[in-house]
Image (cartoon, rainbow, N blue to C red; front, top):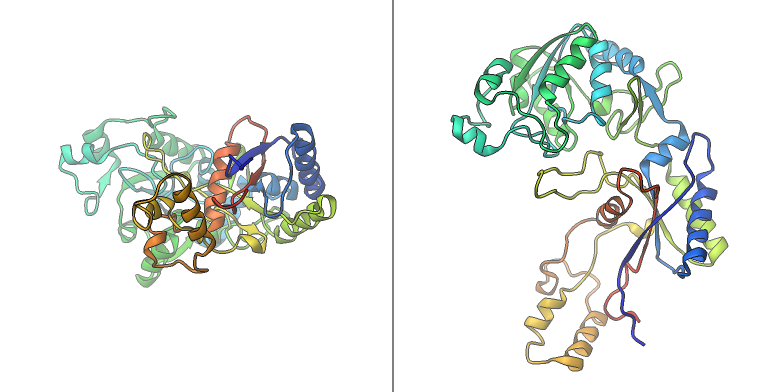
Amino acid sequence: MSRLTGTVSRGIRCPIIKQGDDLKKIVSDSVINAAEAEHFELHDRDVVALTESVVARAQGNYCMVDDIATDISNKLGGNEIGVIFPITSRNRFSVLLSGIARGSKKIYLMLSYPSDEVGNAFLTYDDLDAKGINPFTDVLSEEKYIELFGEPVHEFTGVNYVKYYRELIEHENCECEIIFANQARTILNYTNNVLTCDIHTRFRSKKILKELGANVYGLDDIMTASINGSGYNEKYGLLGSNKATDEKVKLFPRDAQDLVEAIQHEMLKRTGKHMEVMVYGDGAFKDPQGKIWELADPVVSPFFTSGLKGTPNEVKIKYLADNDYKDLSGEQLKEAIKESIKQKDSNLVGKMVSEGTTPRQLTDLIGSLCDLTSGSGDKGTPVVLVQGYFDNYTNE
């Protein structure tokens, strides 16, 4: 009988991961036990993916608000600083903001509008149009913002992030002035000491400000080395961090290439199958209702085995059916398309037959699938097994 399924993504339940746990053993045990309990087979090129969160937790890669405050004060002088383009998130940024404020005397907080970088919106473009506001040029004070728009809250969380962020800053005995603007250079009208908090546009923001003579750092420059024995991330700093407690954040994992390769070797030794292994964080996909791009980590996958490098090389079945084989149907059409897939070029870049296939890195695609599968709540599946991803219509 012909195979009737394609790609399958399974969340794998695991023990609760704590600092010092042996992830190689836990992950391999969990996948193998799940396969035995649920009666499914493991195959070559299956993908075993584990969340960045459990990797960082096992590493004990945490830092405290006081550590952040120390690093901020050391690098930006401990007086007035401009904090620009943060995302509006209790999980992602609130504890960081407390640390930034604790290491400063005054913060000029510059928020992008109508939404933050990852799509969290407190206004809409329709709101701006109704008030005659041009987000590309207009700079709003907090008072003008409230006069025009009131005090809107986030659609899903119900939080007024402007008020929330002000309260966090002032709770640290730090003075606060809030500005709404979308040009990085605007902050230089207030201060020359700047912390850029954007994620994927950070290089451009820092470049613009440095060229204008600013003393500028990004979140990726804070906590790049240990402070008083803390965790750190030498490449991403505070980017990719999450709230652990009101005084503690879990940083993005570091030094996990050896881990993914060790898991790959362990699975080969125990199952005879050569699998791929990756660490994944936020996927990249947009919520059509809330307009939120999920991608709040600096990359989808910071560590992965070599078989996950590159992009898909796929033909578009509907293109073949509508063009090359438009006069065929039934079994003849099926066999013709299978033969085209078998004979496809090793590099389809620029070829019409691949038009409409997703031009993204494999790790971004698979990581996004894993993020949707594992979720971020109480599913208890920090490991995801993806099967059949590298198969196509010809595989039986």
